[in-house]
Image (cartoon, rainbow, N blue to C red; front, side):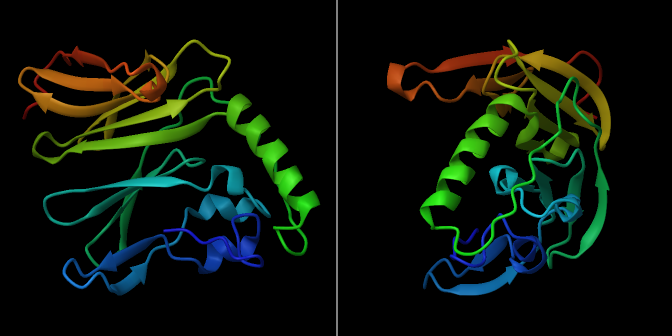
Length: 212
């Protein structure tokens, strides 16, 4: 979840200290039951980094959360109550992480503030590196994470973790993410080709005894 309040938004330090990231919802009633979690502590190094405030998560068979944040090389593991357990992860190759700190004074919806946020966000997300998708295969104790180096490079990066240890970091096509497994292949796809009505699928193997 996220919020876009005029005075509590991703370009204020308060946002990262106070705002939860995940909501538990009752399936039948649609009512919110509990909110929990905060963003990575790395955001405390900035006054406002809303252009990279997104995150992604996966659940394992025991209900544990694996959470990844755009600016943080670590993947954070939490229990069912969202209590922190541990973290793991390594920085991707050739990532420019000199992010622009955007500090907004007053109402973010003021035209000058909106223009500044838009311009810096477009520039940073096209020139800086950040982490993207997570895909967990709990039965094989494998996790895949993609990352963007910047929009000027010819490829993105794909990290492969086995038992939370990095065993590979390889180039992949832009907007690639891992989506499934059917022995003996893992499968990936390219996102963002909706306008062309084109679905690009890839399959690949990982050499070695990764199923145990």
